[in-house]
Image (cartoon, rainbow, N blue to C red; front, side, top):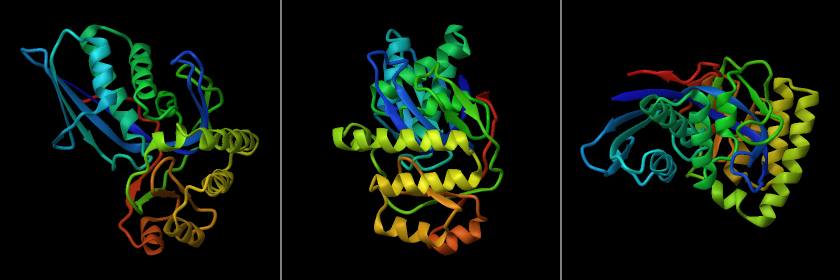
Length: 277
C-alpha cells in the first residue's frame, strides 16, 4: 500500500492556452496553494480491475482512471481518494488527487517527481480537468502565478495568505462548460491575460482580490447570491475558479455572517506533496 497527500489550489483568475502538445497546453493565472488537499491510497489487486473510491463512494473518476491506465494498463488497483475540501468548487481537488495518485504510481514504478507532475497534468488536460492547477501545485510558494502555460512553464510566487476562509454558496460549476465554450474561452483569454499582466506589476493581496472580482464579474460567472456576498466584502473576497465558492482573508466568522453558510478555515501553504503511508 502506498499513500500520498497533495495540497489543493485555488485559481483567482486565469487565461487558458491550448497548443498541439498536452504538456505545453495549460493556463496563465494566479492562485493560492491550500493547507487542505487530497490523500490517495494505491493498492495492487490480483486481477486487472481498477476500482476507484472517492470520499467513500465508488467513482468513475476519469482523471485518475486515465492516469493509472496510461501508466500501467496491465495491472489492477484499488485506489482510494479522500478529499479535504468539496469537489467541483474550485479548490483544486481534481488536480490534488491526480498529483497524489501520480506520486503513488511513481513510487511503485521507480519514476521521479517530474514524471509524476507530468502524468498528472496530462490526465487533467485530456480529461477536461483544470488546465493549470498541477503546475501551480508543483510550485512550492504560497501564492503561485503561472507566467507561462504548461507543466514546465514559468511559475513564480508572491507573498502568503496565512489567514484564509472558504465558503460554498451553491452547486458545482463544471470547468468544461466554461473553458470549452468558444465564446467564453475567447473572453477568458482576454480578461485573464489582462489580469495576469496587471498582477505581475502589482502583486499585493489587495490587487489579487480586486482583479479576481473584475474577472468573475467580467466573465458573468457570478450568481445573484455570489454578487451579493462579494459586495458585502469589498477587497477581501473573491470567487474561486471554477466553483460557486468564495475565498477570503477575513476571519471565518465574518465570512459566515456575509454568506449565511459555515466557512472552512484554511491557510496558504508551501507544504510539498508528502508520502503518508
